[in-house]
Length: 572
Figure 1: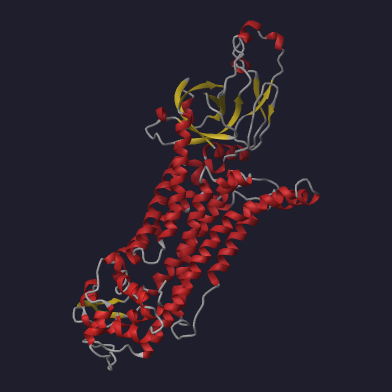
Figure 2 (figure 1 turned 90 degrees about the vertical axis):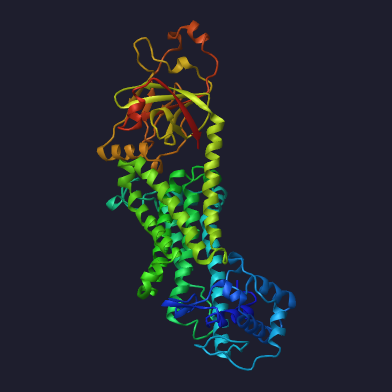
């Protein structure tokens, strides 16, 4: 960035001066650097064609960049004589050497602040020194911003992997048992897991989860406050400039956390397979990372708002400012619309609004950057990273849907509370997402359900009702009102669905007190009671998945009204 700095300092020291082709503004406007107001506007085409500007710039570079090689000067002249020259598609009317020769001799008169630039003139030392210090400081801070953003991403991905590796090396030791039972698995306070936090902002994390969340917050706090280099100039220690640096820093960290939050929320998050940590844990980290992302975006917006409070009407007339504000509003709306209360009671509304607002916000962030800087500084790369993660996730989902194809699911009503959904010809473990396109016009809707059985070696007869219509298993267990509410949430909110692997066999007992599915126990049955002829006809393996689903008011209620329907399935 700003390389070579001496040439950029020449350009930015001359650019604020009025040229012959500059146009008078009816109202003062804010300059790009310094925040001062000017009463004229100079277009990229004006910079490219004004001989006085080009000659003055050429002589400034000749005098102050004596160690710069010719090829570096030529490259600068081809790409950076005008700010963001490639996007404006303007070419300087004079080459570097042409501008030098046209001036005939080195200028000996310095340019004045309020005069129109006519002919080649010298850049005052104080102006060049101040601009050079400004650009060098800005470049150093921006480089640090990028490095710290990369650190945020790496520290969100690598620690879970290293913790898993260390845990595997220290497995089956007293130290591991102590750490897991005392520091990792217990709830943050109290004795119960999955307790709603005050105001229904979420669920109570475990101590281990809270430790990881705290680490992320402390890391971002430290990276926001440190690493601001200066060169001792008056410009670099100015309070306004420090606030601008801080606002830019938290803006970059917000972009980095945006990519992390999207990664944590993906169903096919590779960290789940690599670390063995539950998808529920990563969804918890997704929420807290998103809160951090929004907080940093608010700081970024709030600081720039305060610095331009005296010219807000003019700023809102600029596209980048308006789009950035709208994007910030979308981020802020996502927070209350993602609370546990909303997810529990209005899951489909939450999910659709979540995707819509997130998409609008990410697009808004991109255009906020584009309309302000175009592609000059590479800020858009953070948006590309976040978008890439989202696109890859969706492609993997589509691939899994295509692999499983369209299946015909069989619906069996077990009692007034539970129904059984059996999907033949598919294999999965833990949980899967079911699509029922024929039940709603919203064909994209899908819900996660825990797999209660994966029948590979058994037969259909093992799970068939007897002559009296009774199933060879019964519902057991009781729930308090509070736990029933949690179970309802887990059955309808993919954010809080347990994803432990379950396998049901004729002689097994399925005991999952937090699974969100029915508790089952198989009743003993003498094999001799089964007709040998019937069994002989049903001995071929039947690969299929069975889901036990609590009947609610929405899609699950409509499921109970049919005995068979087409479905698509995406495994975890």
